[in-house]
Length: 183
Image (cartoon, rainbow, N blue to C red; front, side):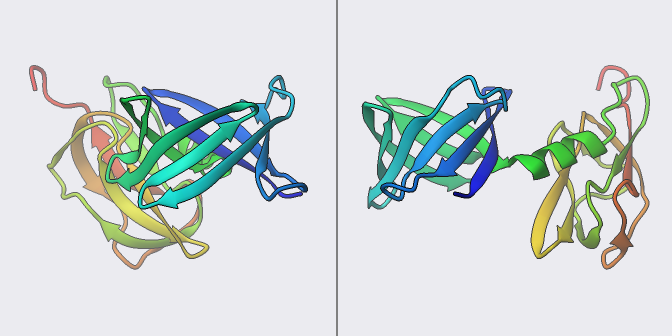
């Protein structure tokens, strides 16, 4: 059985969810939420109906859901309500979270590479104002493109790397300073 842990961010709150492939029916077993194992084993299956329509079962509960990916994340419609979730492999999520410097608005922040890789793009210019979560650069690592985002609002003070640069984990990519007062 292959375990995989996903980091799911919904309404600003992130939970890690661990799934094991079920040996019985090709579905999954939900074995942990946030790694605490308190959920026990809960059978989970997701069956494609057509288009963006799916049938999901959690234990003995079954629901019809709509799932589609867009620029903001995975949009889920359930019981007439829509939710937007950001879903990524938990190890990568933790690596990005732990390696980007999250300084407060008071001072500059060095935004660093979360892993070794190749800089594919720089998506900002010096002097540009950025918002929290705005894309700054893209680093390719192990054939995966990883968007590096701004940890807070501010002004791009300097861009330390160039497209095509090879970086190590922890290398500074971009330096962001606090926005001017009243801005």
